Length: 406
Image 1: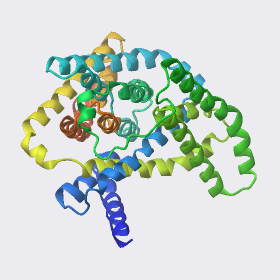
Image 2: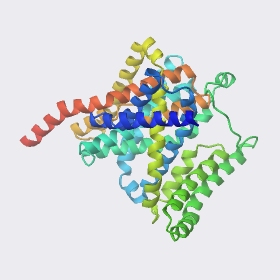
Image 3: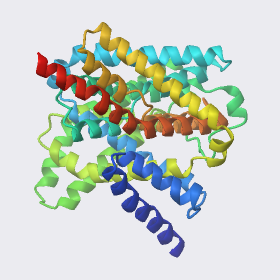
Image 4: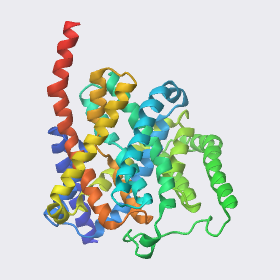
């Protein structure tokens, strides 16, 4: 018991100290969690190998995040921004995935691993970008709205990516499992013919959609009459966990089911209560997830492969910047809006860590490549605040001068 309490104390105190400091100096909360994890394990060694088990548990925060993303997607608002969503977000995800996959394949990676690398590289950091844009008052600008459209499409694109990754398993990795500590579960689809598996999956999705629409509202009305906030919180967590279990039972990503449930409940009268109840758990679990990611960073590998990791990080940033600015130019975004979008979104985001972990567990990515990628993702995120500083110094000043002359 003392050991558990001590470990919990270390994780909490690391977050309480590192995150406020990181936010104060402009690095953002996600980087604060990463830095906290780097300090408590690779640098100081206060925690041990339990971080990997904690990471699997903390990944449930991602499931909660996608449930909340679904709650924000009211059909009317989504339809109103469909043009930017598809033209900017769709083009960015597809082009980045294809280019990175082709480059990786040309360097000798198997096509399955190359596609996974493309998925990972296509994503940007929703947490860092939206928080930074909000702090700078740029969310309602043309560049801010365009950035949000791209991020929203990326968040939606994570769902099919998570569904596709298990299909990209490589037999060599299955023979020598790369996902250490991963326990493969059994699903209802095991041994079923393709048509039966497809019907079972569609049935599970239909159950989520119809249940969310017809059953959740009477349930929440009944619970609301009790006027016990803790029971409403318990019911919200029960709903998310039940959907996650159902999707795991049919062999699919829990994130898919919870996202669909969130969309179904977006117009519910209990939407705000659900958000306020789930948000603290999502925040804590995601914070714990990022700490475990930082704690799992291999500093010895960073030292041994410093030039390779820095080179890959800069290459990814340059490639994504070029793609994003090119899309902004083709879609005739104002120049400075295009620069804001390109400089803000050219990192690899937090869902990159999720896909790396998920891909190794599903034998689509070897451990050595996953360790290297984790460092590349972390470094691109660490560089993002400096890119915003460059934008402020070199771009915003010129924009203000030109506006004054206009």
